[in-house]
Image 1 (spheres, one colour):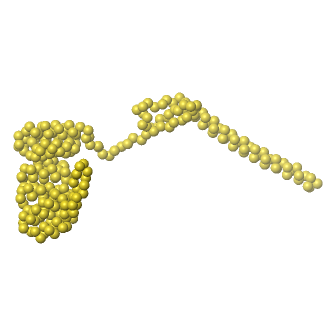
Image 2 (spheres, one colour):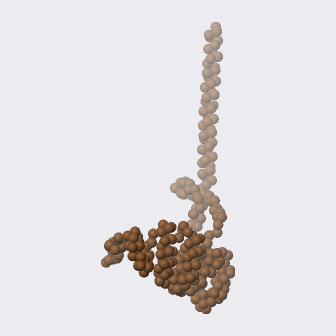
Image 3 (cartoon, one colour):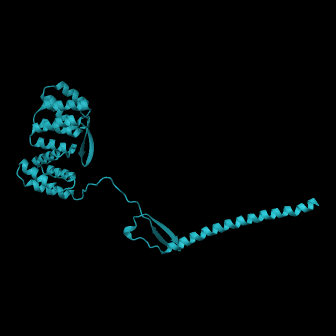
Length: 279
């Protein structure tokens, strides 16, 4: 009797357990169906979106394919915020030409030129350094060396343009105008302020200034500074330094110098080609 009475109870528990599994399975199917239905309704609601216009295509967008059509959802991109203000160099060329035309017709007086330059920057929100640098290049191409000196000195007096390009233009202008004392003063300032960052080009400029004015002792002094700073002279500077040793009657030092710095080869253009030949 005990075994017979326990059998129906065992079957009933098994049936209840199977029913619970069916309920869980049905609830899982219902949840999956409900999620798919919501996704489908969401897609149906996106059919009314309009394609972005041409000037708005640069923004971030999402393309949703539906029935062969491509609809676009616009997403607002992040705005970029800069901590600096970009210099406006678009009209710097015209500003430079205006400056050159203004000072070209002025008398060679410091007060007149500086006054015109001060008026040129009177209404500027920031110093037009790019336009001033372009104006220096224009004056240099036109061989207006006095104006180059005036504009470069005015820039340095304003605390602007203290670059190697400005110093190079000034040294060249001093060389062309035979203003040796001013060139030497500028060079001493450069040598003390920019000791380890002086370019080979500036060394060549000051050597040319001394060489053109028959000052071989100064040429040798600058060459000594070059050796101390580890700057190797170019071919034209090597020729000028060797000539300075020759003028001073130091042929032994000249030979040693040429053995160390003169290149055994040089390049020339022959029949449209660059050819290497012995010096």
